Length: 318
Length: 112
Image 1 (tube, rainbow over the protein chains, first blue to last red):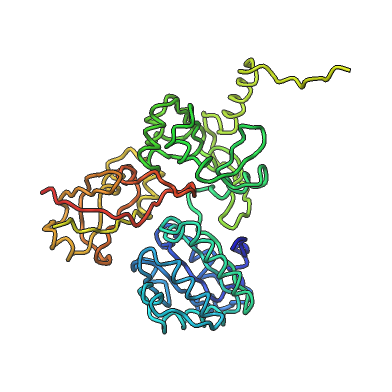
Image 2 (image 1 turned 180 degrees about the horizontal axis):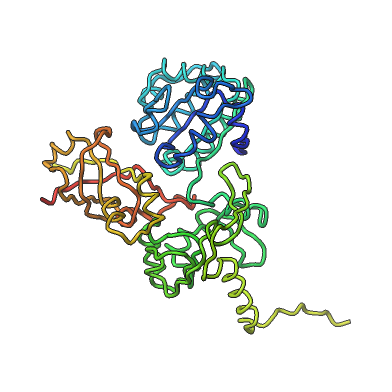
Protein backbone atom coordinates (compact mmCIF):
# COMPACT_ATOMS: atom_id res chain seq x y z
CA UNK A 1 0.00 0.00 0.00
CA UNK A 2 1.09 3.55 -0.53
CA UNK A 3 0.97 6.45 -2.92
CA UNK A 4 -1.95 8.51 -4.09
CA UNK A 5 -3.43 8.40 -7.57
CA UNK A 6 -4.92 11.84 -7.84
CA UNK A 7 -5.79 14.71 -10.16
CA UNK A 8 -7.00 18.30 -9.99
CA UNK A 9 -10.60 19.33 -9.41
CA UNK A 10 -10.52 20.80 -12.93
CA UNK A 11 -10.03 17.27 -14.30
CA UNK A 12 -12.93 16.05 -12.16
CA UNK A 13 -15.11 18.83 -13.53
CA UNK A 14 -14.20 18.09 -17.15
CA UNK A 15 -13.90 14.30 -17.13
CA UNK A 16 -15.41 12.45 -14.15
CA UNK A 17 -18.50 10.38 -14.93
CA UNK A 18 -18.51 8.40 -11.66
CA UNK A 19 -18.26 10.30 -8.38
CA UNK A 20 -18.02 8.34 -5.12
CA UNK A 21 -18.20 10.18 -1.79
CA UNK A 22 -17.05 7.94 1.04
CA UNK A 23 -17.46 8.84 4.73
CA UNK A 24 -18.20 12.47 4.02
CA UNK A 25 -21.17 14.80 3.91
CA UNK A 26 -20.33 17.47 1.32
CA UNK A 27 -23.88 18.90 1.36
CA UNK A 28 -23.11 20.13 4.90
CA UNK A 29 -19.32 20.38 5.02
CA UNK A 30 -18.31 21.37 1.46
CA UNK A 31 -21.54 22.95 0.15
CA UNK A 32 -19.99 24.30 -3.08
CA UNK A 33 -18.29 21.03 -4.03
CA UNK A 34 -21.27 19.60 -5.96
CA UNK A 35 -21.94 22.77 -7.94
CA UNK A 36 -18.38 23.93 -8.66
CA UNK A 37 -16.42 20.73 -9.27
CA UNK A 38 -18.01 17.33 -8.97
CA UNK A 39 -21.68 16.90 -9.87
CA UNK A 40 -23.40 19.80 -11.56
CA UNK A 41 -20.85 21.49 -13.88
CA UNK A 42 -20.85 20.76 -17.59
CA UNK A 43 -17.37 19.65 -18.61
CA UNK A 44 -15.47 18.96 -21.80
CA UNK A 45 -16.09 15.19 -21.70
CA UNK A 46 -19.32 15.38 -19.69
CA UNK A 47 -21.21 18.00 -21.74
CA UNK A 48 -24.57 17.35 -20.08
CA UNK A 49 -23.29 17.94 -16.56
CA UNK A 50 -25.29 16.06 -13.92
CA UNK A 51 -26.99 13.83 -16.54
CA UNK A 52 -23.59 12.47 -17.61
CA UNK A 53 -22.48 11.65 -14.09
CA UNK A 54 -23.39 8.99 -11.52
CA UNK A 55 -22.94 9.74 -7.83
CA UNK A 56 -22.61 7.04 -5.18
CA UNK A 57 -22.54 7.87 -1.48
CA UNK A 58 -21.07 5.47 1.10
CA UNK A 59 -21.81 6.44 4.69
CA UNK A 60 -23.10 5.08 8.00
CA UNK A 61 -26.29 7.18 7.88
CA UNK A 62 -28.51 8.87 5.34
CA UNK A 63 -27.16 12.42 5.40
CA UNK A 64 -28.29 15.46 3.42
CA UNK A 65 -25.80 14.39 0.71
CA UNK A 66 -27.85 11.21 0.09
CA UNK A 67 -30.53 13.35 -1.58
CA UNK A 68 -28.02 14.26 -4.29
CA UNK A 69 -26.84 10.66 -4.75
CA UNK A 70 -28.01 8.17 -7.38
CA UNK A 71 -27.06 5.27 -5.10
CA UNK A 72 -26.70 5.33 -1.32
CA UNK A 73 -24.79 2.48 0.34
CA UNK A 74 -25.17 2.35 4.11
CA UNK A 75 -22.09 0.66 5.53
CA UNK A 76 -21.97 -0.44 9.16
CA UNK A 77 -19.85 1.83 11.40
CA UNK A 78 -16.12 0.98 11.34
CA UNK A 79 -16.60 -1.62 8.55
CA UNK A 80 -15.19 0.50 5.73
CA UNK A 81 -11.92 -1.46 5.56
CA UNK A 82 -13.83 -4.72 5.20
CA UNK A 83 -16.01 -3.21 2.45
CA UNK A 84 -12.97 -1.93 0.55
CA UNK A 85 -11.28 -5.31 0.90
CA UNK A 86 -14.35 -7.04 -0.59
CA UNK A 87 -14.42 -4.53 -3.46
CA UNK A 88 -10.71 -5.12 -4.17
CA UNK A 89 -11.45 -8.84 -4.49
CA UNK A 90 -14.60 -8.34 -6.59
CA UNK A 91 -12.94 -6.10 -9.18
CA UNK A 92 -10.36 -8.87 -9.72
CA UNK A 93 -13.15 -11.47 -9.85
CA UNK A 94 -11.78 -13.26 -6.80
CA UNK A 95 -14.05 -15.25 -4.44
CA UNK A 96 -15.12 -13.36 -1.33
CA UNK A 97 -15.96 -14.52 2.16
CA UNK A 98 -19.73 -14.20 2.67
CA UNK A 99 -19.18 -13.58 6.40
CA UNK A 100 -16.98 -10.60 5.52
CA UNK A 101 -19.67 -9.31 3.16
CA UNK A 102 -22.35 -9.68 5.87
CA UNK A 103 -20.20 -7.68 8.32
CA UNK A 104 -20.36 -4.63 6.07
CA UNK A 105 -24.16 -4.43 6.36
CA UNK A 106 -24.50 -4.64 2.55
CA UNK A 107 -25.42 -7.55 0.29
CA UNK A 108 -23.10 -9.26 -2.18
CA UNK A 109 -25.39 -8.07 -5.00
CA UNK A 110 -25.00 -4.44 -3.91
CA UNK A 111 -21.22 -4.74 -3.67
CA UNK A 112 -20.97 -6.60 -7.00
CA UNK A 113 -23.01 -3.88 -8.70
CA UNK A 114 -20.77 -1.23 -7.06
CA UNK A 115 -17.61 -3.03 -8.25
CA UNK A 116 -18.98 -3.27 -11.80
CA UNK A 117 -19.80 0.44 -11.86
CA UNK A 118 -16.28 1.25 -10.65
CA UNK A 119 -14.76 -0.79 -13.49
CA UNK A 120 -17.10 0.52 -16.18
CA UNK A 121 -16.56 4.20 -15.40
CA UNK A 122 -14.60 6.23 -17.95
CA UNK A 123 -13.12 8.46 -15.25
CA UNK A 124 -13.94 7.71 -11.63
CA UNK A 125 -13.06 9.53 -8.45
CA UNK A 126 -13.23 8.68 -4.74
CA UNK A 127 -13.70 11.68 -2.46
CA UNK A 128 -13.16 10.45 1.08
CA UNK A 129 -13.87 12.22 4.36
CA UNK A 130 -13.36 11.94 8.09
CA UNK A 131 -15.89 9.12 8.31
CA UNK A 132 -13.17 7.00 6.72
CA UNK A 133 -9.98 8.49 8.15
CA UNK A 134 -10.97 9.18 11.76
CA UNK A 135 -12.81 5.97 12.63
CA UNK A 136 -11.34 2.62 13.64
CA UNK A 137 -8.61 1.73 11.17
CA UNK A 138 -7.76 5.40 10.55
CA UNK A 139 -4.90 5.70 8.03
CA UNK A 140 -5.28 2.04 7.07
CA UNK A 141 -8.79 2.80 5.78
CA UNK A 142 -7.43 5.67 3.68
CA UNK A 143 -4.54 3.52 2.45
CA UNK A 144 -6.97 0.74 1.47
CA UNK A 145 -9.11 3.16 -0.54
CA UNK A 146 -6.05 4.66 -2.24
CA UNK A 147 -4.95 1.12 -3.11
CA UNK A 148 -8.38 0.34 -4.55
CA UNK A 149 -8.17 3.50 -6.67
CA UNK A 150 -4.69 2.52 -7.87
CA UNK A 151 -5.81 -1.05 -8.69
CA UNK A 152 -8.85 0.21 -10.64
CA UNK A 153 -6.40 1.79 -13.08
CA UNK A 154 -5.90 -1.71 -14.51
CA UNK A 155 -9.43 -1.31 -15.92
CA UNK A 156 -10.09 2.41 -16.27
CA UNK A 157 -8.93 5.82 -15.07
CA UNK A 158 -9.59 6.20 -11.34
CA UNK A 159 -8.35 8.69 -8.75
CA UNK A 160 -8.84 9.45 -5.05
CA UNK A 161 -8.83 12.70 -3.13
CA UNK A 162 -9.36 13.53 0.56
CA UNK A 163 -12.11 16.03 1.38
CA UNK A 164 -9.90 18.47 3.26
CA UNK A 165 -11.47 21.13 5.45
CA UNK A 166 -10.59 24.06 7.67
CA UNK A 167 -9.34 26.57 5.16
CA UNK A 168 -5.74 25.80 4.40
CA UNK A 169 -4.87 22.46 6.01
CA UNK A 170 -3.70 21.22 2.63
CA UNK A 171 -1.26 24.16 2.51
CA UNK A 172 0.22 23.11 5.84
CA UNK A 173 0.81 19.58 4.57
CA UNK A 174 2.21 20.69 1.21
CA UNK A 175 4.68 23.18 2.72
CA UNK A 176 5.87 20.66 5.32
CA UNK A 177 6.32 18.10 2.54
CA UNK A 178 8.49 20.23 0.28
CA UNK A 179 10.51 21.74 3.11
CA UNK A 180 11.13 18.62 5.23
CA UNK A 181 9.98 15.68 3.10
CA UNK A 182 7.18 14.78 5.52
CA UNK A 183 3.61 16.10 5.87
CA UNK A 184 3.22 16.29 9.69
CA UNK A 185 4.66 14.91 12.93
CA UNK A 186 8.12 16.33 12.13
CA UNK A 187 10.78 16.90 14.81
CA UNK A 188 13.49 19.45 13.94
CA UNK A 189 15.18 19.44 17.37
CA UNK A 190 18.39 17.90 15.99
CA UNK A 191 18.60 20.40 13.16
CA UNK A 192 17.31 17.96 10.56
CA UNK A 193 13.80 16.55 10.09
CA UNK A 194 12.72 13.32 11.73
CA UNK A 195 9.24 11.90 11.06
CA UNK A 196 7.37 9.68 13.46
CA UNK A 197 3.58 9.90 13.90
CA UNK A 198 2.61 8.86 17.41
CA UNK A 199 5.87 10.26 18.78
CA UNK A 200 6.35 13.71 17.21
CA UNK A 201 2.71 14.40 16.29
CA UNK A 202 1.03 17.27 18.14
CA UNK A 203 -1.50 15.42 20.27
CA UNK A 204 1.01 12.79 21.39
CA UNK A 205 3.56 15.47 22.36
CA UNK A 206 0.96 17.40 24.35
CA UNK A 207 -0.52 14.39 26.13
CA UNK A 208 2.92 13.11 27.16
CA UNK A 209 3.79 16.62 28.34
CA UNK A 210 6.93 16.73 26.18
CA UNK A 211 6.61 20.41 25.29
CA UNK A 212 7.29 23.30 27.67
CA UNK A 213 5.67 25.91 25.39
CA UNK A 214 3.07 25.89 22.60
CA UNK A 215 2.65 28.25 19.63
CA UNK A 216 -0.75 27.97 17.93
CA UNK A 217 -1.10 29.51 14.50
CA UNK A 218 -4.46 29.58 12.72
CA UNK A 219 -6.03 26.73 14.67
CA UNK A 220 -8.28 26.16 17.65
CA UNK A 221 -7.04 22.98 19.35
CA UNK A 222 -8.82 24.07 22.55
CA UNK A 223 -12.11 23.23 20.83
CA UNK A 224 -11.05 20.13 18.90
CA UNK A 225 -8.33 18.17 20.70
CA UNK A 226 -8.73 15.58 23.48
CA UNK A 227 -9.08 17.08 26.98
CA UNK A 228 -5.66 15.83 28.25
CA UNK A 229 -3.97 17.73 25.40
CA UNK A 230 -5.96 20.88 26.25
CA UNK A 231 -5.01 20.48 29.92
CA UNK A 232 -1.32 20.52 28.99
CA UNK A 233 -1.77 23.73 26.95
CA UNK A 234 -3.21 25.31 30.12
CA UNK A 235 -0.16 24.20 32.14
CA UNK A 236 2.55 25.60 29.82
CA UNK A 237 2.96 29.04 28.20
CA UNK A 238 0.68 28.95 25.15
CA UNK A 239 0.80 31.71 22.54
CA UNK A 240 -2.06 32.04 20.05
CA UNK A 241 -2.14 34.02 16.80
CA UNK A 242 -5.78 34.36 15.74
CA UNK A 243 -8.07 37.12 14.45
CA UNK A 244 -10.83 36.05 16.84
CA UNK A 245 -11.30 35.03 20.45
CA UNK A 246 -11.35 31.23 20.48
CA UNK A 247 -11.41 28.48 23.06
CA UNK A 248 -7.62 28.24 22.68
CA UNK A 249 -7.04 31.98 23.04
CA UNK A 250 -9.04 31.89 26.29
CA UNK A 251 -6.61 29.39 27.84
CA UNK A 252 -3.47 30.97 26.33
CA UNK A 253 -1.01 33.19 28.23
CA UNK A 254 -0.66 35.43 25.16
CA UNK A 255 -3.16 36.10 22.37
CA UNK A 256 -1.91 38.21 19.47
CA UNK A 257 -4.76 39.44 17.29
CA UNK A 258 -3.83 39.16 13.62
CA UNK A 259 -5.38 40.18 10.30
CA UNK A 260 -7.74 37.71 8.62
CA UNK A 261 -5.94 35.91 5.79
CA UNK A 262 -7.77 36.35 2.51
CA UNK A 263 -9.93 39.18 3.90
CA UNK A 264 -7.39 41.68 5.20
CA UNK A 265 -4.07 39.86 4.72
CA UNK A 266 -2.53 38.46 1.53
CA UNK A 267 -1.15 34.96 1.21
CA UNK A 268 -1.56 31.63 -0.56
CA UNK A 269 -4.16 28.99 0.19
CA UNK A 270 -3.98 25.45 -1.18
CA UNK A 271 -7.18 23.91 -2.50
CA UNK A 272 -7.91 20.28 -1.54
CA UNK A 273 -6.36 19.16 -4.85
CA UNK A 274 -3.11 20.93 -3.81
CA UNK A 275 -3.48 23.78 -6.29
CA UNK A 276 -2.09 27.01 -4.75
CA UNK A 277 -4.43 29.98 -4.99
CA UNK A 278 -3.19 33.54 -4.34
CA UNK A 279 -5.35 35.49 -1.90
CA UNK A 280 -5.96 39.18 -2.62
CA UNK A 281 -7.34 40.97 0.44
CA UNK A 282 -10.17 43.43 -0.30
CA UNK A 283 -9.89 45.15 3.10
CA UNK A 284 -7.15 46.66 5.26
CA UNK A 285 -6.60 45.64 8.86
CA UNK A 286 -5.04 47.53 11.79
CA UNK A 287 -3.59 44.19 12.94
CA UNK A 288 -0.35 42.62 11.69
CA UNK A 289 -0.41 39.51 9.53
CA UNK A 290 0.56 36.09 10.91
CA UNK A 291 3.70 36.23 8.77
CA UNK A 292 4.73 39.61 10.20
CA UNK A 293 4.26 38.46 13.81
CA UNK A 294 6.24 35.27 13.24
CA UNK A 295 9.04 37.23 11.54
CA UNK A 296 9.26 39.65 14.46
CA UNK A 297 9.30 36.79 17.00
CA UNK A 298 12.04 35.09 14.96
CA UNK A 299 14.14 38.28 14.85
CA UNK A 300 13.72 38.85 18.60
CA UNK A 301 14.74 35.25 19.38
CA UNK A 302 17.76 35.50 17.03
CA UNK A 303 19.08 38.49 19.04
CA UNK A 304 19.09 36.50 22.28
CA UNK A 305 22.29 34.71 23.36
CA UNK A 306 22.19 30.98 22.66
CA UNK A 307 20.97 28.75 25.48
CA UNK A 308 23.98 26.48 25.07
CA UNK A 309 27.44 27.48 23.81
CA UNK A 310 28.06 26.36 20.24
CA UNK A 311 29.79 23.00 19.98
CA UNK A 312 33.28 23.42 18.50
CA UNK A 313 34.65 20.44 16.65
CA UNK A 314 37.78 19.04 18.27
CA UNK A 315 40.89 19.62 16.15
CA UNK A 316 43.31 16.73 16.52
CA UNK A 317 46.87 17.70 17.54
CA UNK A 318 49.44 17.19 14.87
CA UNK B 1 -28.21 -4.95 34.16
CA UNK B 2 -25.28 -3.40 32.25
CA UNK B 3 -25.76 0.02 30.66
CA UNK B 4 -26.82 -0.04 27.03
CA UNK B 5 -23.94 0.96 24.75
CA UNK B 6 -24.36 3.44 21.92
CA UNK B 7 -21.84 4.74 19.43
CA UNK B 8 -21.28 8.50 19.38
CA UNK B 9 -20.30 10.15 16.10
CA UNK B 10 -19.15 13.78 16.25
CA UNK B 11 -19.92 15.55 12.97
CA UNK B 12 -19.72 18.95 11.29
CA UNK B 13 -22.72 20.97 10.08
CA UNK B 14 -22.92 23.91 7.72
CA UNK B 15 -24.64 26.01 10.42
CA UNK B 16 -21.69 25.36 12.70
CA UNK B 17 -19.28 26.35 9.91
CA UNK B 18 -21.10 29.65 9.47
CA UNK B 19 -21.18 30.30 13.21
CA UNK B 20 -17.41 29.70 13.50
CA UNK B 21 -16.89 32.70 11.24
CA UNK B 22 -19.23 34.84 13.36
CA UNK B 23 -17.60 33.72 16.59
CA UNK B 24 -17.41 30.73 18.87
CA UNK B 25 -18.29 32.68 22.00
CA UNK B 26 -21.97 32.95 21.22
CA UNK B 27 -25.00 31.19 22.69
CA UNK B 28 -25.85 29.81 19.23
CA UNK B 29 -22.50 27.99 19.00
CA UNK B 30 -22.87 26.53 22.50
CA UNK B 31 -26.40 25.36 21.69
CA UNK B 32 -25.21 23.59 18.51
CA UNK B 33 -22.31 21.81 20.21
CA UNK B 34 -24.46 20.72 23.14
CA UNK B 35 -27.31 19.17 21.16
CA UNK B 36 -27.16 15.46 20.32
CA UNK B 37 -29.47 13.66 17.90
CA UNK B 38 -30.80 10.19 18.70
CA UNK B 39 -33.26 7.76 17.16
CA UNK B 40 -36.79 8.27 18.62
CA UNK B 41 -37.06 4.59 19.65
CA UNK B 42 -33.75 4.76 21.55
CA UNK B 43 -34.99 7.86 23.36
CA UNK B 44 -38.27 6.17 24.25
CA UNK B 45 -36.47 3.11 25.62
CA UNK B 46 -34.28 5.27 27.85
CA UNK B 47 -37.25 7.51 28.80
CA UNK B 48 -35.60 10.61 27.41
CA UNK B 49 -37.93 13.42 26.40
CA UNK B 50 -37.13 15.87 23.61
CA UNK B 51 -34.83 18.75 24.64
CA UNK B 52 -34.11 17.21 28.03
CA UNK B 53 -30.61 16.84 29.46
CA UNK B 54 -28.60 13.64 29.27
CA UNK B 55 -25.15 12.66 30.50
CA UNK B 56 -22.92 10.83 28.03
CA UNK B 57 -19.96 8.84 29.30
CA UNK B 58 -17.02 7.34 27.45
CA UNK B 59 -14.06 5.46 28.90
CA UNK B 60 -12.23 8.81 28.99
CA UNK B 61 -14.74 11.35 30.24
CA UNK B 62 -18.28 12.60 30.45
CA UNK B 63 -20.34 15.59 29.34
CA UNK B 64 -23.92 16.81 29.58
CA UNK B 65 -25.93 17.47 26.41
CA UNK B 66 -29.46 18.33 25.37
CA UNK B 67 -31.13 15.61 23.32
CA UNK B 68 -33.34 15.78 20.24
CA UNK B 69 -34.78 13.03 18.07
CA UNK B 70 -33.83 12.76 14.44
CA UNK B 71 -33.49 10.54 11.39
CA UNK B 72 -30.43 8.57 12.48
CA UNK B 73 -29.82 4.81 12.72
CA UNK B 74 -30.70 3.07 15.96
CA UNK B 75 -27.86 2.76 18.43
CA UNK B 76 -26.05 5.79 17.04
CA UNK B 77 -25.83 9.32 18.42
CA UNK B 78 -24.64 12.34 16.42
CA UNK B 79 -23.37 15.67 17.76
CA UNK B 80 -21.39 18.56 16.23
CA UNK B 81 -17.72 18.71 17.31
CA UNK B 82 -17.00 21.21 20.07
CA UNK B 83 -15.70 21.61 23.61
CA UNK B 84 -18.15 19.03 25.07
CA UNK B 85 -16.90 16.32 22.68
CA UNK B 86 -13.28 17.18 23.65
CA UNK B 87 -14.12 16.01 27.18
CA UNK B 88 -15.21 12.62 25.81
CA UNK B 89 -12.17 12.05 23.58
CA UNK B 90 -9.26 9.89 24.70
CA UNK B 91 -5.69 10.86 23.93
CA UNK B 92 -4.49 7.54 22.54
CA UNK B 93 -3.62 7.91 18.86
CA UNK B 94 -2.55 4.28 18.30
CA UNK B 95 0.76 5.59 17.00
CA UNK B 96 -0.90 7.46 14.14
CA UNK B 97 -0.97 10.99 15.55
CA UNK B 98 -4.74 11.05 15.15
CA UNK B 99 -7.07 10.23 18.07
CA UNK B 100 -10.19 8.22 17.28
CA UNK B 101 -12.68 11.01 16.66
CA UNK B 102 -15.78 9.05 15.69
CA UNK B 103 -17.57 5.90 16.76
CA UNK B 104 -16.89 6.06 20.49
CA UNK B 105 -18.75 3.57 22.67
CA UNK B 106 -20.81 5.55 25.15
CA UNK B 107 -23.45 5.11 27.80
CA UNK B 108 -26.37 7.50 28.12
CA UNK B 109 -28.03 8.57 31.34
CA UNK B 110 -31.18 10.73 31.38
CA UNK B 111 -30.94 13.60 33.87
CA UNK B 112 -34.56 14.77 33.90
